[in-house]
Image 1: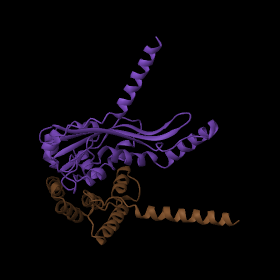
Image 2 (image 1 turned 90 degrees about the vertical axis):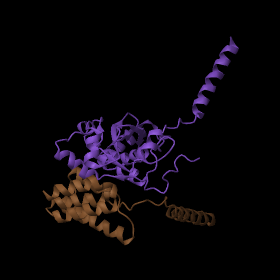
Image 3 (image 1 turned 60 degrees about the horizontal axis):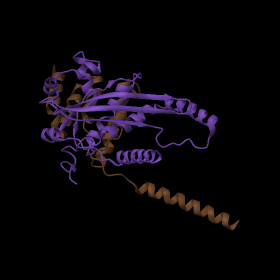
Image 4 (image 1 turned 60 degrees about the vertical axis):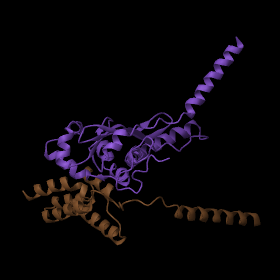
Amino acid sequence: MKTNITSKTGLTLTLLGTALLGGCASGPPTLYQWERYQPQVYEYFKGQGSGADGQIIALEEDLQKIRAKGNTPPPGFHAHLGLLYSQVGKTDRLEKELLAEKELYPESSTYMDFLLKKSKK
Amino acid sequence: MHSTYLKLIIVFFAAVLASGCATVQPYDYAAYLQSKPRSILVLPPVNESPDVNATYSVFSQLSYPLAESGYYIFPATLVDETFRQNGLTSPTDIHAVAPAKLRQIFGADAALYVNITKYGTTYTIISSAAVVSANARLVDLKTGTLLWQGSATASNDENQNNSGSGLAGLLITAIVKQIVNNVTDASHTVAGITSQRLLQARAPNGTLFGPRSPNYGKDLRP
């Protein structure tokens, strides 16, 4: 009986140890805070999920989380959010997001200018 | 006679051992290092598998490994829309667009052409696995030069052994796994691993780190 208790305690300790180790083992820091960007892109392509309105809500929530931690959204995040706004007829928000993408990532300038020019037509 | 056989066997084992130990041939990065791409236009992948979902399942997961390696990656959904608005809906047609034209519209330094060679659940009598395989070519859009190419594969059956469950057990496991694989979009999860293995910067054979990574320029240091 005594050994039984000891072995149970041992097991519990082992489990706790594993959980602690698992909690500590964080990978190398990432350049960006991704949140649901890629899954949302997949939802968009599948044409399923919550539609443009729901996807806007999801990405705006994510953006709040990213800003709260002082991190950076990944390349494409703002531009994709802009595309969703354009689909619900909010051209001003499209332009705002394209400019945000361009400011954060100057490498996108040529393409963002191309899209901005088109949105003004 | 006997000793000839013995020698043959020794030579054979030596050959096997040597091939096992041979170091991987490092990739020739000369063109890549000269080009110094900062931004990569990832094109919708060409799907050579029977699963129609493959292109967008993989396409939606190619940004992460490249962006985290230090490159600007163009937004997949907008890139796809731009091609659509120009009458290009098939990845094969998109891959045929001239590099100069891509550079003019997107202003990208390089383009990534991906082909999906396997996507989906393969079912054999005693096992069932979701497998995704792909290869990629990175091309300089100013010159059309090939900068890098590679391939990768992943499966959700990699860490499982089938010891001790008997043939009936194996059959049941295989059937259950196939159902689970089909219902839970397991191939999409596996595609994320394939994408990571294919594109995460990793000398001496993978892509190199880009300018936005703290590891930029340190790939080939010993």
